[in-house]
Every structure is written in C-alpha cells, then in structure tokens.
Length: 90
Length: 394
Ligand SMILES: Cc1cc2nc3c(=O)[nH]c(=O)nc-3n(C[C@H](O)[C@H](O)[C@H](O)COP(=O)(O)OP(=O)(O)OC[C@H]3O[C@@H](n4cnc5c(N)ncnc54)[C@H](O)[C@@H]3O)c2cc1C
Ligand code: FES
Image (cartoon, rainbow over all chains, first blue to last red; front, side):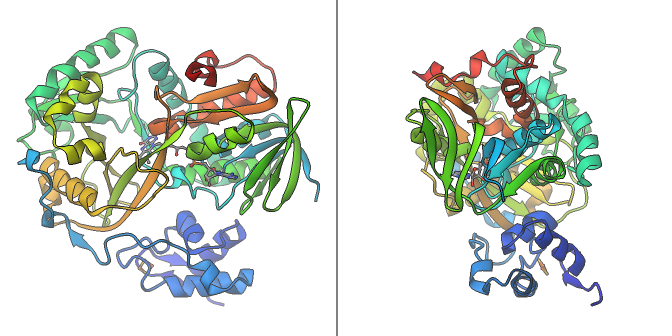
C-alpha cells in the first residue's frame, strides 16, 4: 500500500503509525505519544477513526479497546483572550 | 518466556526507563513492568524544563546541576542507541518573571544566595533587559531572574528513547502488566505478582512515581509520596515566539515567604497556581500551571483554564489571538520536603526506591538512573544517596 498521510494536521504517514504499533502502541494515546498523530488542530477528529482501524487490524483488538483517550477541554479551538482570569490580575 | 531476570523495574515513566537503561548499559538483564503504556503516567503529562534556579541551594540544586549536565552526552547517546531525538535544547535559558513588586525582594535574595553558593550563572534583570532576550514579554512586567544555562527537552521522547535503547540492550518491556503484590521471602524481595503472571529477580526497583507509595505499602512501608496535580493548556502551532522557558516568580516568592498566602484569594491558594510557558520543538506552547492536592484525579478544570489563559495573555500580550486546542494534567509525585526517595530499604533486602521527584523528575532522571545502577552494582556513587533515604520521614 502507498504511504498515505493518515493525520493531515500533523502530517503523519501510515508507515509512521505502523512503526509506532510495532514499537508497542496499542491505543490511540500510544500512537499519539510516539508520532503526534491526533495532536493537531482538529485534535484527531479527522484521523482518530482511521488510526483506530489500523491498530485494530494489526493487533486484532476491538475499536472500543483502542479509543480510550479521555476527552478534555476544549471541544474546538478557543481564543485565549476569551478568558478573564482572577481579580488579582487586573 | 523466562520469568526470571536480574532486576525488575516497576514503572514505565522517565525514572523507570532511565533506571532500566543505566542497568542495561552494565549488562544486567532487566524487565520493566508498566501497568498501562509507556509514558502514560506523569512523564507523559509534563513540561520539559531543565532548570536549576527553581531548586533550593544545597543538595537539591547540586543534584539538578549534575543531572542537567548529563543531557548533552545523553542526547547523543540515545540518538545513537535508539534513533530518537529527545529534542534537547542546551542553553535555551530560563526566566522567572516578576509581575508584582512585593515578590521582587524574595527572588533577588534567592538569586544572590544561589549565585554565591554555586557556580550557577543567574542574575536579576530589568524588564527592558529581559525584553531584549524575550521581546514577546509585556513591558508592563517588572523584571526577573534569568539563567542562560537552563535547557529543555521533550519528556515523552526521553521515555521512548530510554526504553528503546534499553530494549536494544538487555531489557524486556512489559506493558499492560500491573504489579499487584510483592513476593517477600525471609525479609528479601524476590519477585512480584502481576496481572500477567509472576516474575522473579535479585532486585526490585520501585519507580512507580506518584503511585510508588502504594507499592511501598505492599512491602509494609509507609512512604509519604502523594499526587500534586498540574494542569497544562496546549496552543495551536506557532512560529517561534519564545525561546526560553518561563515562569512567574510568585510561586517561588510564596515558597520563600509563606505569609504571602494570606493576601491571595482562596481559589488561587487552592489551585496553587503560578504561570509557566514553554514552546516545544513542534511549535505549540505549553501554558501552565496548577499545583493542587486533589487525589489521583487527572481532570482539567474550567477555573484553572480561565486562570492560566488570562495569565498567559497578561505576560505575553501577543497570545491574545492565539487558540488553545488541548489540555492535560499530570500528577507530580510530591514528597513533604520536595526531594526524591532513592536507595535501598533497610527492612526489605533487594527492594530499591526511585520515586517522588515531584516537579523535577525530567531534569533529575539521568542521574537517578545512574545512582540506582551504581547502588545495585555496588560501585562508587556519582552523587551521595544518604539524603534521599525514606527514613527522613520516619
Ligand atoms: C504539569 C507538570 C509540569 C512539570 N514540569 C516539569 C519540568 O518542567 N521539569 C521537570 O524536571 N519535571 C517536571 N514535572 C515533574 C515530572 O513530570 C515528574 O517528576 C516525572 O514525570 C515523574 O516521572 P516518574 O517516572 O517518576 O513517574 P511516571 O511517569 O508517573 O511513571 C510511573 C509509572 O508507574 C506506573 N505504575 C504505577 N503503579 C504501577 C503498578 N502497580 N504496576 C506497574 N506500573 C505501575 C504508572 O502507570 C506510570 O507510568 C512536571 C510535572 C507536571 C505534572
Ligand atoms: S488529522 Fe490528525 S489531528 Fe487533525
């Protein structure tokens, strides 16, 4: 198969994902920590299912075992100036 | 597969993998047991400062300087052995920025002490001088300390590089393997029970970070390591905007003068907040931080996001239009005196501690690994270990 880009935001190729899995990554987080795939602007919205599919194929694990990343804020990018902070910082 | 080796290392963080690597370099057969995945603990949810001025003059600072000095060689070595670049940036420098007049005298006197007691290159600068180093800093700030020899590194890459280098030598890495009990026979630790079978070794190293207290309990020891949460926001990728690692001086000023706490709002005391910022090799900014006691909970809270984001814009006004895209939190392995627990345990032969590095584990990992390997091989120690005994809490 051609070495296509799986994570567009971080430009991570299929071969890099496969290498991470060979190195022991069995979850989305494991691949993310090794390759940065899923850490881009869309925070994995585009690539996460694809990566899960690749891991599942290689490890024979079910998708639900693979996507265990905890979702933390924000849901979409937020401008820092939207926050007001503490009064003592006025 | 054999279930016997020379040394079992518990914990796949930066300390456990560093210990494993140091042992493998000396030809020990090692099994590293990690209950989840490598870097899934604190070493995967942290900044990568290699700083000196943040440590107390004395053994803490001395250890920091010695361990920090090992990164140069280590970065080459790990690149060679594992093909992984740990993104070590030597001499990127570090700044502690003062934003409140009342903090200034404390920082200035600490700088004087650090400079007089060690060879550390650290001094106070005005905000105009600091802005020559970091033009993005707000001119409304007061000034601060600058240490040009501080560095930074990618902690996650460090873990994977240590692990890969160790694996290429004599280490077996076992992920998804949680230690559930120690096997102790006639006062000697001889092995562990895990969720994936039992393993035996001559030595067992407890490098379970924040969770090391739980493992010590299995050995009947009470070692007061507890989680101190730190929350971090991650921004979108930016062109280089800052090159040093920065912190605000408030946390240090409070450490030096705890009375100051009385003047701060309850929320800030509870979150233990300060401010820090670092730009990673990928161009994202890591904005922090909190220092909270909230058990083993790794959530990110809205009040912390609000606080950190606003403070970031106050220190670096250009961040106003920048987006944050992700957040995480890590659990620093806190000890009552801020020093790690390293070394043999009198009650149980063969059981060795290497945990509790609180906010300095990345910086102190190279030396900690060497010290543990020196203890096990009974060779001369690169750094005195007495001060790190768990006995000091008795
Ligand atoms: C927000 C934040 C910022 C920080 N900034 C810096 C910095 O700039 N510079 C610096 O030097 N330090 C910094 N630190 C501190 C540093 O991150 C820690 O000291 C370091 O990561 C601790 O590493 P560790 O290997 O001891 O722990 P961990 O990485 O937590 O490793 C311990 C491992 O043990 C595993 N484990 C636990 N129990 C068991 C069991 N029963 N069986 C098997 N495995 C088990 C865990 O899953 C975990 O992976 C920061 C920390 C935080 C939270
Ligand atoms: S495509 Fe992977 S993070 Fe956006």
